[in-house]
Length: 73
Image 1: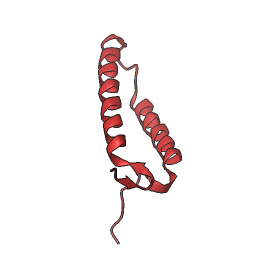
Image 2 (image 1 turned 90 degrees about the horizontal axis):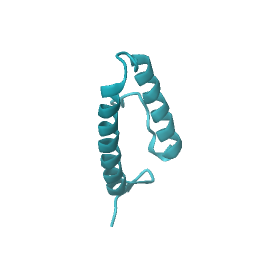
Image 3 (image 1 turned 180 degrees about the horizontal axis):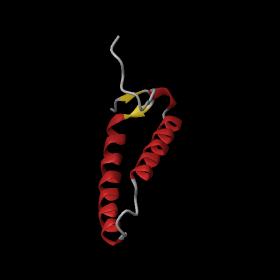
């Protein structure tokens, strides 16, 4: 039995994301060892975050994913 919220299988998504994040962290650490200083700028990081957010919004349109923090009613 799984829990679904906004069309997202929470348990499966959590486990898959844990694995993907761990791999990405190890890859990034290795790449940064060999990259010249300043090869990745804050503007690059901001752009990557925006692109990732847009991908999630397309993938899970029912989830109401936003970069803005939720407001209290």
